[in-house]
Length: 136
Image (cartoon, rainbow, N blue to C red; front, side):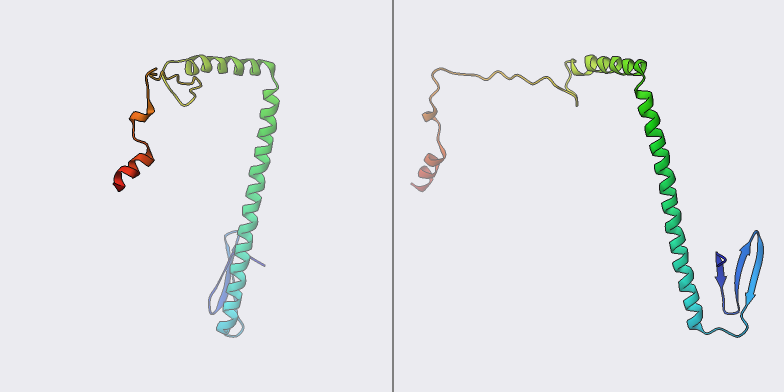
Protein backbone atom coordinates (compact mmCIF):
# COMPACT_ATOMS: atom_id res chain seq x y z
CA UNK A 1 0.00 0.00 0.00
CA UNK A 2 1.33 3.43 -0.90
CA UNK A 3 0.99 5.96 1.89
CA UNK A 4 0.21 8.79 2.41
CA UNK A 5 -2.53 9.18 -0.17
CA UNK A 6 -5.54 11.37 -0.82
CA UNK A 7 -8.94 10.21 -2.01
CA UNK A 8 -11.56 12.19 -3.88
CA UNK A 9 -14.59 11.17 -5.95
CA UNK A 10 -12.59 10.63 -9.12
CA UNK A 11 -9.20 9.25 -8.10
CA UNK A 12 -6.66 8.19 -5.50
CA UNK A 13 -3.63 10.50 -5.44
CA UNK A 14 -0.23 9.73 -3.91
CA UNK A 15 3.29 11.16 -4.08
CA UNK A 16 6.49 9.13 -4.32
CA UNK A 17 9.82 10.95 -4.57
CA UNK A 18 8.01 14.18 -5.49
CA UNK A 19 6.30 12.35 -8.38
CA UNK A 20 2.51 12.65 -8.28
CA UNK A 21 0.70 9.37 -8.96
CA UNK A 22 -2.99 9.51 -9.87
CA UNK A 23 -5.11 6.36 -9.99
CA UNK A 24 -8.44 7.10 -11.68
CA UNK A 25 -11.51 5.06 -10.82
CA UNK A 26 -12.97 3.09 -13.73
CA UNK A 27 -16.48 3.86 -12.61
CA UNK A 28 -17.80 6.45 -10.23
CA UNK A 29 -17.40 5.07 -6.70
CA UNK A 30 -20.19 4.82 -4.24
CA UNK A 31 -19.89 6.99 -1.12
CA UNK A 32 -19.93 3.94 1.11
CA UNK A 33 -16.80 2.52 -0.57
CA UNK A 34 -14.97 5.84 -0.28
CA UNK A 35 -15.81 6.05 3.40
CA UNK A 36 -14.49 2.53 3.89
CA UNK A 37 -11.21 3.41 2.16
CA UNK A 38 -10.90 6.59 4.26
CA UNK A 39 -11.55 4.62 7.45
CA UNK A 40 -8.85 2.11 6.52
CA UNK A 41 -6.45 4.97 5.81
CA UNK A 42 -7.19 6.62 9.17
CA UNK A 43 -6.69 3.29 10.97
CA UNK A 44 -3.43 2.65 9.09
CA UNK A 45 -2.20 6.17 9.81
CA UNK A 46 -3.04 5.75 13.49
CA UNK A 47 -1.19 2.43 13.66
CA UNK A 48 1.85 3.94 11.89
CA UNK A 49 1.86 6.79 14.40
CA UNK A 50 1.76 4.33 17.31
CA UNK A 51 4.61 2.29 15.84
CA UNK A 52 6.69 5.44 15.28
CA UNK A 53 6.05 6.50 18.87
CA UNK A 54 7.17 3.13 20.20
CA UNK A 55 10.31 3.25 18.05
CA UNK A 56 11.07 6.72 19.41
CA UNK A 57 10.66 5.43 22.98
CA UNK A 58 12.98 2.50 22.25
CA UNK A 59 15.68 4.83 20.92
CA UNK A 60 15.28 7.04 23.99
CA UNK A 61 15.54 4.09 26.39
CA UNK A 62 18.60 2.72 24.58
CA UNK A 63 20.32 6.08 24.97
CA UNK A 64 19.24 6.24 28.62
CA UNK A 65 20.68 2.77 29.36
CA UNK A 66 23.89 3.66 27.50
CA UNK A 67 24.40 6.88 29.47
CA UNK A 68 23.45 5.17 32.74
CA UNK A 69 26.10 2.48 32.20
CA UNK A 70 28.63 5.14 31.22
CA UNK A 71 27.88 7.17 34.39
CA UNK A 72 28.22 4.06 36.55
CA UNK A 73 31.62 3.36 35.02
CA UNK A 74 32.69 6.95 35.62
CA UNK A 75 31.54 6.81 39.25
CA UNK A 76 33.84 3.85 39.85
CA UNK A 77 36.79 6.18 39.31
CA UNK A 78 38.49 6.77 42.70
CA UNK A 79 39.52 10.35 41.83
CA UNK A 80 35.91 11.28 41.07
CA UNK A 81 34.69 9.62 44.29
CA UNK A 82 37.26 11.61 46.27
CA UNK A 83 36.10 14.88 44.65
CA UNK A 84 32.46 14.07 45.43
CA UNK A 85 33.28 13.41 49.10
CA UNK A 86 35.26 16.67 49.33
CA UNK A 87 32.39 18.63 47.80
CA UNK A 88 29.90 16.94 50.14
CA UNK A 89 31.97 17.88 53.19
CA UNK A 90 32.20 21.50 52.00
CA UNK A 91 28.43 21.66 51.64
CA UNK A 92 27.90 20.13 55.08
CA UNK A 93 30.27 22.64 56.67
CA UNK A 94 28.72 25.66 54.99
CA UNK A 95 25.05 24.69 55.09
CA UNK A 96 24.46 22.29 57.96
CA UNK A 97 26.51 24.09 60.57
CA UNK A 98 25.51 27.67 59.83
CA UNK A 99 23.40 29.63 62.31
CA UNK A 100 20.68 30.35 59.77
CA UNK A 101 17.86 27.83 59.39
CA UNK A 102 17.51 26.20 55.96
CA UNK A 103 15.98 23.19 54.24
CA UNK A 104 18.82 20.92 55.45
CA UNK A 105 18.65 22.01 59.10
CA UNK A 106 19.73 19.07 61.26
CA UNK A 107 20.28 20.80 64.59
CA UNK A 108 17.26 20.42 66.86
CA UNK A 109 15.97 23.56 68.50
CA UNK A 110 16.33 23.68 72.25
CA UNK A 111 13.67 25.71 74.01
CA UNK A 112 13.93 26.66 77.67
CA UNK A 113 10.56 26.53 79.40
CA UNK A 114 9.75 28.44 82.52
CA UNK A 115 9.19 26.21 85.52
CA UNK A 116 7.71 27.42 88.78
CA UNK A 117 8.02 25.32 91.95
CA UNK A 118 4.85 26.89 93.37
CA UNK A 119 2.72 26.12 90.32
CA UNK A 120 -0.73 24.87 91.18
CA UNK A 121 -2.93 23.66 88.32
CA UNK A 122 -6.09 24.09 90.36
CA UNK A 123 -5.93 27.86 89.90
CA UNK A 124 -6.90 27.37 86.24
CA UNK A 125 -10.27 26.22 84.99
CA UNK A 126 -10.45 22.74 83.56
CA UNK A 127 -12.93 21.70 80.84
CA UNK A 128 -15.32 20.04 83.23
CA UNK A 129 -15.23 23.11 85.52
CA UNK A 130 -16.09 25.32 82.57
CA UNK A 131 -19.13 23.18 81.68
CA UNK A 132 -20.32 23.25 85.30
CA UNK A 133 -19.96 27.02 85.37
CA UNK A 134 -21.92 27.38 82.10
CA UNK A 135 -24.79 25.18 83.34
CA UNK A 136 -25.21 27.10 86.60
